[in-house]
Image (cartoon, rainbow over all chains, first blue to last red; front, side, top):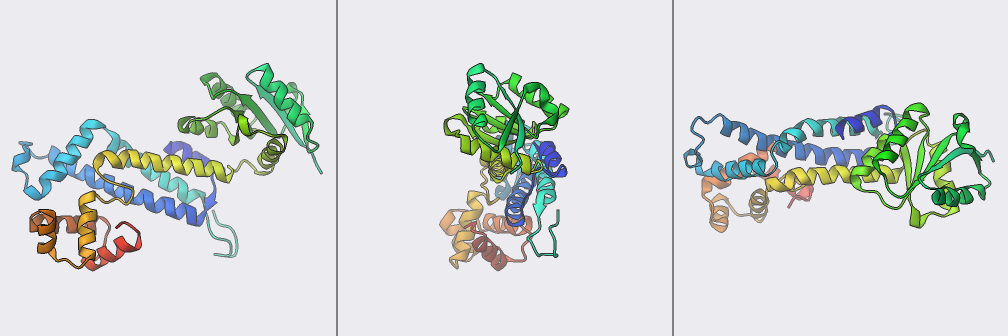
Length: 108
Length: 207
């Protein structure tokens, strides 16, 4: 999907108004940020030698359990998302049309 | 008015005959014989569904001719939509809604669009991206705002003017947990302080 969007944008086939592109990019950046936060939690957990939830501070335990359980349900989904979402963002940036008159001409 | 030259293909003879009848009656369209593809500006393809064979045929056509495709079919799923777009499909018409006028409009838009995907197809792609985001976020207890339900609860109470101790009491968390939730949100969203976090969450409709 990411590669397809990049190809479409590079070929000039995917074009969308700046406002629409910015909205989609903002949502994707939020998603990417949330995904990275979850991956950081998983990464921290993987580097704890004992890997015992009861040894984690209370305030982190819930997040760790949530992240581990979600990863069990859909293994690898976060890793895939963290490589795919930046491609969507880049594709939408390339596909973004500047508003008419922003710099006197249409910009790609 | 200059005619748009097109070739027609269909997965079955009935679809071919029906579409040919629509297209022949339209004065702005010149229907070329199948072997005259080199002169065509648009390919119209009619089928029941986007099967593996249809995709293979469209992909071959995209490589050989690069013609924009107007696809007429019964129904299409979101994942099939991606395959169609990859094969230079620039317009999709549901069979049930096809009229000579609509077909002519799509053909002329395809010919004049320079290969640019029409707005509705771009909209479908954006919907697909949104769905993929939900599929990643939902199992992790997150939503499209990027906040967990716990973060939303804390931000809402902050917006209502409660301090850390009061929020902890209302949500049955320790004060330390509330502080960590606030730190997590401000750090992740690169916000300066609690007030900034509340203002940002309100402004963006997160809470």
